[in-house]
Length: 343
Image (cartoon, rainbow, N blue to C red; front, side, top):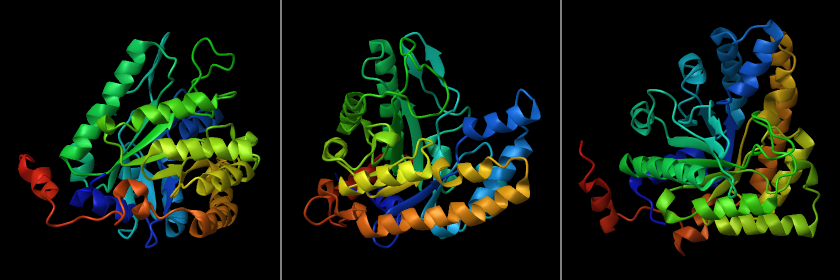
């Protein structure tokens, strides 16, 4: 993989000086909006309540993070002023409201939002989550593939890293069918691996994968069999990758990270494993803050120490060749990258 100046700069901004990603997700919408609305007995969570919690996340967790993942609905308008300019800024593009069909889920962008706008506002990377099942309807899979390809092309056009989150999900035929943002019960490792293999193709332009555990988090038991599945996922990714927590509990996600780091992951981009316990105190804002400043920060320190000790330097991934990730000024790719930029 060749790196253009913008992609190299953005990836460096997301990691620490040792090339390790320790990133916190603040872009969740249904997992925050849902409990607030349920507590208040309203159809929709008040904007101010959701935004207030996201601001607290930025204020309390950014010091230990190399980058923060923010959404344009709540986190950016209410917390961009407290985000340190020393931290990487990853911005969400996909809408949390997907379209469920008989054949599977269809993703789309947030209304009136784009790669170009993320670049213009100073984002260091574009994050997109796409739901994918290899056994979904062919028309659904083609639509999802085309969706991701178009974003990859736009990220190349605006020279900004593409961080791609990939999640399998239950189809209508599955026993545990749900629309919630939770790890799929009884997911098959083969579905996860086949999905990674598809989107690792160069057509999609993915720079960093944000991947789920190929086995249910509670099954990440340290065994050689589970490790082999993680190893295969890392091999198929073919580029730097990080782990997502998918709402796993703190002990379970720690075990997932052990497997992932042994398989070559370059860090994590996690949210609920870090802050969900504190959020459960809603609407007691004092208790939420105490939880974030206490147990959440303690857990963040723990997994950051794990990453420091075990995660792979993204710059040394084999995909960049023997010399590692770098921009080479004499490379014709510099001229090619900007020849048709159009601005």
